[in-house]
Image 1: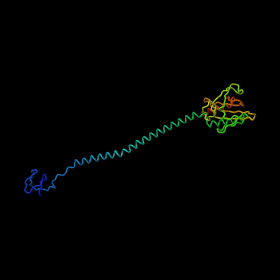
Image 2 (image 1 turned 90 degrees about the horizontal axis):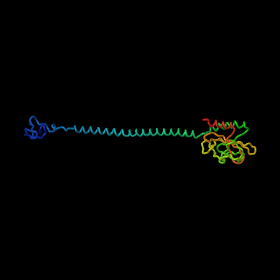
Image 3 (image 1 turned 180 degrees about the vertical axis):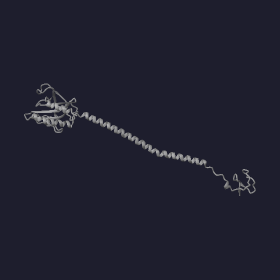
Image 4 (image 1 turned 90 degrees about the vertical axis):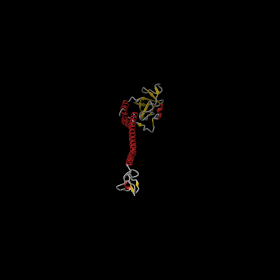
Length: 245
């Protein structure tokens, strides 16, 4: 069986020319298989390359997306932590500043005052009992402190005796930091009972309008009257201790 050497058309034994393309059949007629045109794969290769490029691009985008998201999350978390730390630091400084300004009296100053009273009282031939912050102290006339501060009166001059018309009712109460709701915020109380009838000397160390004031009470009956102490050792040492940092 012969085929056209040009187009591969099947030839009859007596064909001199290819009935399809007119090619002379002389010179031998190779088989159809040898002369079939090879398929052109250029278009297929191009499509394959494009598909591979798109696939690689999508894969790169896919694997990068979690990293970007995580990076954004980490950045956001870091920023949030920094802001939280800054806020916490500011609050700490603010709290410390507020606490410092509010606490006009502290344990260190309280101990310094106790040391002064312990050294000063014997010189006066007296022995004082200090209010411990829990157990009320009782004076010889029967008043108890700080319980009876709500009955306090103030006299601007040394006491002349109850009922002389110079006493004024005052707001007075226990406030161990010196910062309280009273006109006279008491930070320390010392009482001495003389043992002679109802004799007593009671000191109330106060903060009045932000300033140290040492009040003394020696009344034995009538209103519970407080006056500013005339003892300079007591008043000056209290002021010195109060103003210490």
